[in-house]
Length: 372
Figure (cartoon, helix red, strand yellow):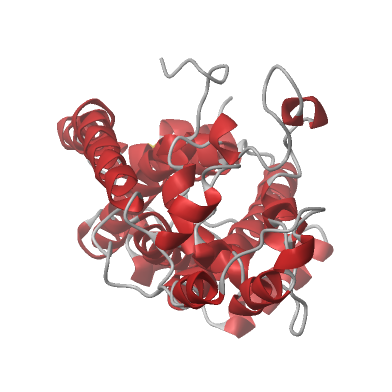
């Protein structure tokens, strides 16, 4: 005879759990630059699920409230000792060890989302913090974001191992219990949790509607706006001395892509500029020097220049450590015809290369020469 079960978790908390998993997994899988918008969508979905779960931790049914599984350290140690002996106490809600992993995951995902919002605002001008966070702060936020993401994976692995172990010890499928919301009835379960299916559906619909609106309305609008800005930037480049001087022979790289010492070296060694003598007059050299300290147009430019080792003055953008790191997954064949003219041919992949912005949305997803 099957033991009696009761509904422990209502529909909202189970759907939030599913949205939480989907958001975190989706953001991880869409972490490449070309998928930046999907990464943002999944990240915000995880953040929305997190916020709703925190609220439900105070107003939800008994076993969904934080106070029902806020166990002290000694309870966790005691539970683990019992588990190692093979006879742990059964809990209707989260057991002490599982509860700590829940709180840890909530904190980690929250910190990951906040650092991601800060990073996307500084790095790509996206989200509520666009134009507010400095490049340096955004760069630090990105490193923290990556570290937290890997930490989440490690904690999730431990959490899943704990679920499997607990299922075996208690002879109860805990994964199925979270899906159905039902677990074996014990003395600590006074009454079933209400279903609240309509409320759960409304919460899920709100998350899906937000994601759909972002992809269907915000992304095309923002891409069009960036294309307009790029056209304006290209028109303004013609008035820059460095652009007029360099663009006759090759792509005129923004001075911000290399550290100032690289340009100083280039001007000093202009008689042997990649095998050529530029023969620039002194007046023109001084004019070009004025552009060396121009502010970087983007985080990408700032990151490239700041990745050069102290004291070194590389002459090629492709020599910079960050350039190599950012392109390590690009097939070698893409740096030769017919895809591009070489590693120096930034425009083959980046529509906004002349401006030095290198926004992820401006990456070409088709063959060079075809902007469709």
